[in-house]
Length: 476
Image (cartoon, rainbow, N blue to C red; front, side):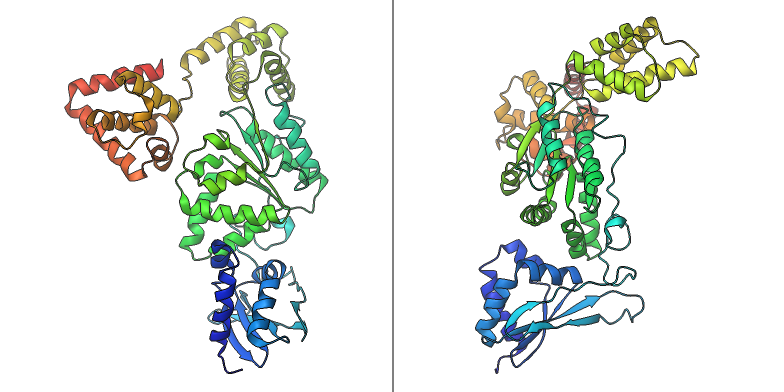
């Protein structure tokens, strides 16, 4: 065979590129370096042991076909696997040679590395050394168990689906399971309860809970430190991945692209995904359509505000866990006046206990009324970007669809800028998320809008009065 190893591998890549998704090609084939070709044996260098194993599991057929086309029916493939090990000279890659089984079978024997050493370890974004399953902290709060989750009409479907998943992760039709609803309704609690039960029933499985913002930060760090592949490999090891607040990916295209690849790998490998969001997939903005379509593959279950009976049960459970004995009259008063979400209910109970302990007062109905009245007066409605847009559009008497359009009319632009200004100051959303939900703009446009509004507040008295009026309507 006269072709060089570069020519042989390039000819293989030409065929492979047409037969695998572009992101898979970039992730799994572009990092490969051809080393040499000797008769019918091609040697390639791959960046990690996991990389080798994944190629063998997922792409052996396409590798076999392309190599036999280039090198003949007896084609063989050998791997050089780059290892990182402090025992060796770090200026040179340490490689191990993986021989093929025989001349007629291109598939190599799987191999394993000694777990006692640090050789071949995949960099864990959670700073946990090694790839042993016991070393992957699931990041779960033990209090968020099914035993502590109160079931009611508001969450029965989500709870039942979650329990089914926990008993058979990856083996139900609920993959992914997307839990959605407003803040404070128990999405994180239920998602973590699934993880806790899976760890109890299947201790060998790797379970991980991570918030979308944490995932984003890890991804950026992996790109900055040039170890993106390690980041990918770590997440592709997970048996049950719980991703909280997936809506925070809005506008973050590269993070979405990476998660798309991780999602595909886990789903195709029969691993379980649990996602939480503030909205159902159909209402999520700023996320790629291909990602949203995958969110719809399994089950989307909503959690709603708890009814009165459920609120009573939540308070009783919380009081029991905290060792508090409360009269039914007090529980009913709290449950009647705190209705929005579970978090506020538990917060009211904590405040009541704190007042009783610090002031050495008995918890009475009068103390409960005094505390709840203060909480209601001081609490502000949780404001969403959608709500801000509605209030701003009502104030300026313009249709909501115009603020979402690309029109450059002065009055529309100003209303859009005001909505962005209040969204930045009254919500915890990122600039990218705000821009995506208000007219599909980028973070730079939102930043400019906020500066423009601040300048007008300082220089235009009439505009300043308008902002004050809108702020009152938002605060009500």
